[in-house]
Length: 341
Image (tube, rainbow, N blue to C red):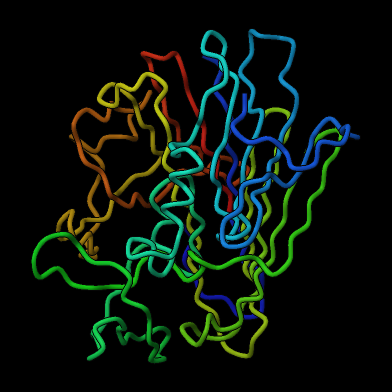
């Protein structure tokens, strides 16, 4: 997550998913013969009045190499990444993200009690979080649904859409303001080398909940050997614009054996939280060691540890990118998540 204050500039955040060397559920609504190798099409499945988009490419005849073959995106929910599928030698086509069947997705994203304010969006797949990620605290107002806080010296009212499970847990705002927001414009681009879907949200001041005015452009792109996600937030107002952009993916472990899965995070420190129910940062940073030594060569096994942490002071390569890795030894499977801001 990148958090910084900008004026009238664009803040781009880019992520790429690449398979390490170690049949799709949705059928396109348009069944006409494809004109390109990479397809970008609407499906028959809709959320919030907008049909899901399927980016896909044919599976390679070379069955010795892994390949990302499709990605499904929800324009009705802020371009959330619903599914990413890949061919893995010896395993066939698998899901890279943990996502339930369409019937369960539709039930979860129905604006019901568990989906109030779009909370259902960050419970599977990969939700996009704008204009802030994680939690913001403040004074709970008498309505019990809104909190007052200060951002850049300006008082704001935010929806208190979350709280911990323990009795007396403090309500707070979490994961941004586009969880239930549909895009205003959508463009699909098939091609011979890649396919993409771009959604634009003319967010303004997010219904009075955020300073200045924002234009959010979210692009998802499927290429031969990767799936890319880019989020760009542009300040189109007259005030300074604080922005946090995040992605909230649930990665699947093909072996189903979580304890032996290794995580590698190229960071030097982690943020201390008060507890794993509130998960409020205390402002203290500590070195990554012991149960949290995920910066070790080859990564560290998750074991039985519960994680809801922020890792900082990242190690960047010459291009300015940061690469995290998920390695499932039992499945002979690995995934690289490459971030660039």
